[in-house]
Length: 306
Picture (cartoon, one colour):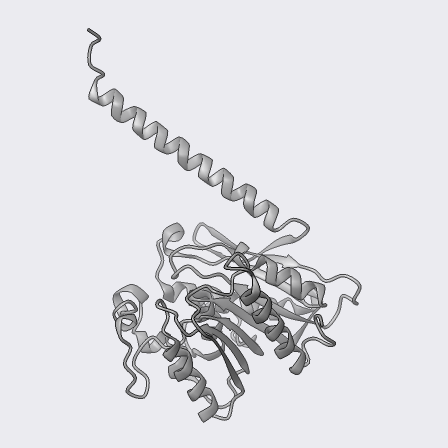
């Protein structure tokens, strides 16, 4: 009869196996990221603590490298996780159309132990960095769009609306407000607005989770005259971020005389716009509509297809 395996040895083996699997997962992510960002370059837009936050830059070809419109995308993931690779297809599309496209990384809870209030600060820093370096990047500082999905859509909208949460050490004379918004199932209303019923969503976005009062981080509560024009794509069957919140934000925008287009998709849930979802038709439709919206603002010219 074989002697029993000591429990300490078993535990050590489990710990080592877990560590090995973590290493494999990290390497896989690095390989996937390398594939997603092939042909691009990376720059650090912010150093904070031990973190170097980067943007992956997608350069257009065949256009003069000066005064080009730009768009920066912030990934989704509930302010907890996610990767800039989510918007790699969008970045490649808009670069092919003559824009400089940026896929931004920012701090999240799972990797940096932060709350959404820090994510907002990072997004503001990123827009400001692009505008501050516009000449070197060949970007028109007056034609910078911000986009994103879910929590990333919240961050994009936050850069356009929230008066607080800029990093105090940064040059406040350089605006962190973009000139247009392209938003995909974004979290736009984080506290009751005009008496609306938040339902279960309201219980998921409290002060303890956000790191600030929900109202203070809620783009819908800070819309004013002159808020940048926006287009919003939202699934009407979204169970994560209710469609009603996008309707409330749109109403607030129009009340203040701002342009805001809400494009609702019947029977579609959260994340419906991603390239890997379904048969790809929602991705194609949202991308074409976003392209046409930017054409109407003078960020692009011509048409992206038939």
